[in-house]
Amino acid sequence: MIEKYGPWAVIAGGSEGVGSAFAHRLADAGINVVLIARKPGPLKDTAEAVRAKGVQVRTIELDLIAPDPLTAIREVTDDLEVGLLIFNAGANSYGHEFVTGDLAAFQNVIDLNITAQLALTHHFGALMKDRGRGGIMLVGSLSGYMGHAQISVYAAVKAFGRIFAEGLWLEMREHGVDVLELVLGVTRTPAMARAGLDMDIPGLLVAEPDDVAREGLEHLADGPVWVAGGNYETAQKRSGFPRDRKVAAAHAAMAQILPKR
Image (cartoon, helix red, strand yellow):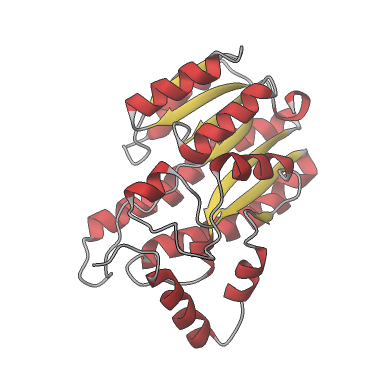
């Protein structure tokens, strides 16, 4: 891990849930980490816990939809050799029927999941290409395999992320840089809890953050896409035809775990 992806990793969305689990696993492997997150409390707590494992930790309290987030990130990272970028910051910050929703709020979803992801990948990916080794992990979602009511924009940006990862994987593999989109299903994270998802439905497949992080790091070299948490068959089914039946069936299943409106 250190030889290929060290000595420093940058984790966007690294303060809690899967991002925190990545930080702990990388620290266990001896890799120093830069944690980027919005919430100062969880960011500080994770940094202290990871630092206690004997690695160096730098933190950046930053909202990635702020203007030019890369400038703030470069101030902290330009003196480091970054061998791994994990973009785990993508989230659905606004769910609403599209035509009656707030376009500015939808734009925030796009800026976080696409614009910021592209900026960080462009910057750190170029450095990794020059050094001839490294890894880029873009954390995706099963939502990106199919359109969903109320989260149509979020599902669309997650579909973008997967296709982008596939193209980037083709471009970077000859330069010694691994690229992987790690696709998550329902995962027991603080963000999921805040969203009010019912994760106690019998038969619902729910992954734990540490298991997802372990799976992602183990398969970082197996790009361009790895579906985590036992959701491979679900991803296959959601990619099939006819689309009307597939989309309607997935919507009915999703309605069981979403908060009642």
